[in-house]
Structures are given as C-alpha cells and as structure tokens.
Figure 1 (cartoon, helix red, strand yellow):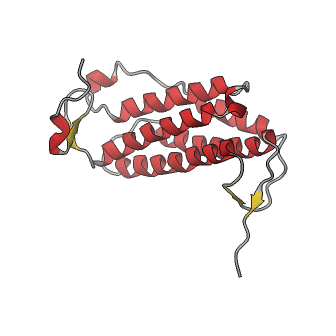
Figure 2 (cartoon, one colour):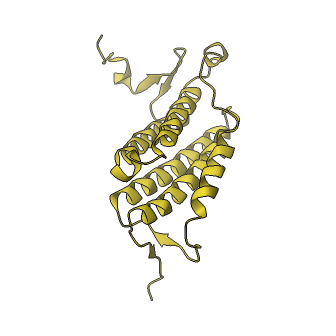
Length: 184
C-alpha cells in the first residue's frame, strides 16, 4: 500500500468520512496539535527514568487517549463518530489522583520554576506547552464548531499533569529546580 495519495497536493486534507478541509483549518490545527503532542509524549516515554518506572504504563494510556481525542476532532460525520473509541469519563479523576500522589513527595512550590535541567524534565515541559497549545486550538475551534464533550477539561488537566510530572522528574533525577527571578 502506498502512503502518498497526492490528494493533499492542493492544500486540503480529508477528515474521517471523506469531507475535505484546508490544511490550515482550525479543526486540522486542533487535531494536528494533538498529533504533535502524542509524538512528544512518546519522546517523554523513551526517557530512561520514565520508561523504567511504574508510570510508563500510565503514560501509554494517556498517549492512547490523546490519539482517540484526535480521531474525534477529525470526525464530523455522526455515523463515523459512533465507531470511535471513547475516553473513560473517570480519566480526569485518574490524572488528578496521580498528581495528588506525586505532589505529596514534592517540595511546596513558592515561585515559578524555569523549564531547565535533565532531558526528561525538559521532555515533560515540552508535553505541557504543546498540550496548552492544543487546548487553545480546541477552544478556538469550539467557538464555531462542536467539539467533543470533556475534551477541554481533559487537556487542561493533562497540561497540569505534565507540570507535576516535570517536578517529579526533577526529584527522580536528583536535578534541582531552577526558580525564576525577574531581571533588574
């Protein structure tokens, strides 16, 4: 099977169900950003400190969720949407519980920290900022089009999760956090 179809050479792409949109349409931007996020989650998962931890399976679950959310954004045909995987409604609560558990071992946060340090810490911050961009794209799309219920809350919590993950990785890699200070 060939990967290339040449149908996108005119600057359009197909949604699930066949509808064609410009490649810079907000819907394409939204699910494209989630696709980008998924790549960065994969990069985070390859960090040794993550891949050899008990959290690796949870990260794979999150990665699968993000892929599923993208498929929902790429589908406007209700008949096609009925066949898409669902994201468990309790996933946001699972993320909150994970964050609460990790936060117990972290020092209190009294100021902003810079996204620097160990490569795993940076990878978590990359996931966080791409997730935030995805959230902005989804919100912009939602002004004019239907978006999946629960997606904004999911992305909002997910970006929080990556922030906590970055702090947890500072601890796990014995890398001190670098506080931000305004230059005079």
